[in-house]
Length: 333
Image (cartoon, rainbow, N blue to C red; front, side, top):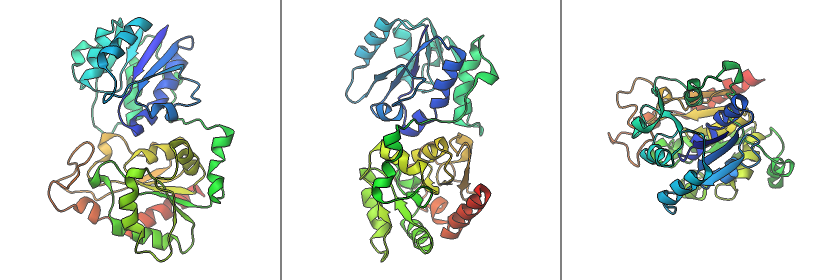
């Protein structure tokens, strides 16, 4: 049996789909599992024993028609799509895959053989994705795997050491986000870094696109943390997160990396809400301002605050983040 999963959403979404891949293999142990993903999937799914082959699709460069031709040639028996795009629905349909499962809130969901209920009601994205498997007679709760997984080689696992770091001896901070309004304030991050550096080693991580924001945070600091923003690849970032004492992050992909490695994580929420289902699945705490009528202002956030106040983030104080971290660390002791 050949199964293909379509997941071309963001980095965090792919990480949160790894329990689905594992569960598919538990339910259909003799199957061959393909995953359609963006180029970063090569790094995220490297060494994953539950994925047999990747089909890399970058909509900005690759032809959807060519992808459909490839899918037709592979002659898949089953297609499963946690991604809710129109493209996924019509491509899997035109590929002639006989049984296709997706969500009822997906674009062109009528093209799926079975459309499963999708709601933003607090159900975690992991559990929501796993609900796609309930349509199969072979489904069983005890065959589900619910924790995200990232698989490092022994050499990759040790890569954090080249920065002079020791296991569980530093606090990691990921200040960036693709959306401006999902970033906590420069001042907030700066004050947290200053306070933590009195007793802790602090390390910053992120992509090259996060460098300008990071520089604004740390440039006024006399004592600067180890700044690895833009200096590490994705696999190195996995190692840094795995061996950190804890992570502080905006509502973004590093949160789910921390969950995969069971690293305690403080997750700072602004324009988004936990009802969307992307909060830490385990070993984490959310810091947010509850009761604001403007929250949520969107599924992902915006480049600018729609109300012009940005109070969802400005009202989060350094003490709120530091106290959340302290309480989380005490629980983990």
